[in-house]
Length: 295
Image (cartoon, rainbow, N blue to C red; front, side, top):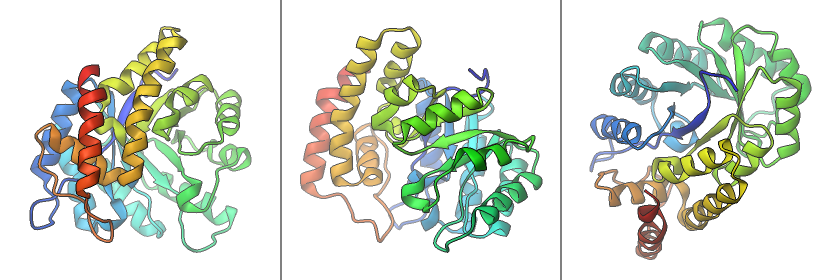
């Protein structure tokens, strides 16, 4: 296990004001709250943050706000991925200037970029900064699946430290960790945290860890202590919540549950739909029945 990067990291959601602007003050309150709840680190400006619905200025200001609120207490990984290499580099430089610990990037999407072009994209980002890089493997959204061959090429770069593995291909996760034990591999699908840990993941980065960090940590801690029965028990509890979260939209649902803890997040950005009254009721039920008792 890498002594620097392991455990449970929250892929931070983005709070908005009542008029739809990013609420940096509320975001900083969330950072402080999650640290008190035992979170091990943060993943900023990723899918969960609605990153591709944010402006350049908002993405840059978000990383500044998170690093400031964190104040060196936990690790901060900043997602800098973009369809344009130059834009990704500009985000990476901002992350470095602000004091982030590492960067991460989804592969360029929409166009059918070649494997060579994707490798060069990562090499160019890594050449632009001294920060460590976590490749963000999310084939369901990006249309590109990281392979052992691509990883081998990227691993020759001194800045390459690991992979955020958001895929259900547990065989590939295991192979990557077995072939490259020096790399950090993060499990990306929260509902498969225990499976990822069993297959060699060093920890998890996830959306739902915003609203149930302690329950997620119980999965991680039970596994670390070798108690597989407890690991499965807590994963099952998490999945009862995740099932409802997925039913009504991950980002809106996570924010709705944080509002139950007293935050003001004001929903999600269009074209994402606002939370329904039915969804609020179901989320309230699992919040009271599962999340609160496991704090």
